[in-house]
Image (cartoon, rainbow, N blue to C red):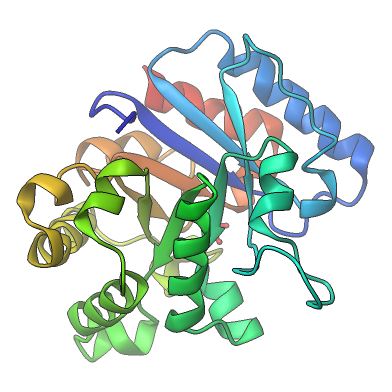
Length: 258
Ligand code: PEP
């Protein structure tokens, strides 16, 4: 698997932003320019699907494209959906799956997430699987149960050989931290990482679990980015709001790179 322990991953989830393609291109080009200088960071930009095929990456650019979602079927009568084959054709390498906004607002179930991971593997796309608890679940100390359910269900019918043959990232995104300005304590982020690794080890053994990078997402900023990596023990970050401001996102990249 390609991602080494030293190479940190920073994913930009632009969600339904910015408003126009010219703004998107400007933001993309600014980040792309910055990443050319970096060797210890892998940057993935996940713009709205409409622009995936238009944002151009050259051979010497150290940046990749990710989709924010996809359907599990390869083609057919699925109005409004985008297939893994279409993403491959647009040179997309990554796909965010199971984001809480899709689970909550669009009824995406664990079973759908599982079908999408299987489809991503089949088409050599790297899934970025998002998991995380609500504030109520946190208060009721149900975080462990939520992780177990979301991971066990997401990995149904996926063998250890498939995990080894493909790349997959898991992102811990506490739902209460997304867009709120609040983040868990660094110790809690570290505990979340260890719990995710433990659940994976239960399914596939420690050796395979060690190969799955675990990232953090939720109100990442220039102020906390480096500590989330160092004190929270994370392999990377998924950045929402701060990723659509070129200067702020570039500063997050620099903070992690240095
Ligand atoms: C997200 O929704 O994936 C996210 C990380 O958002 P934010 O950084 O804005 O909290």
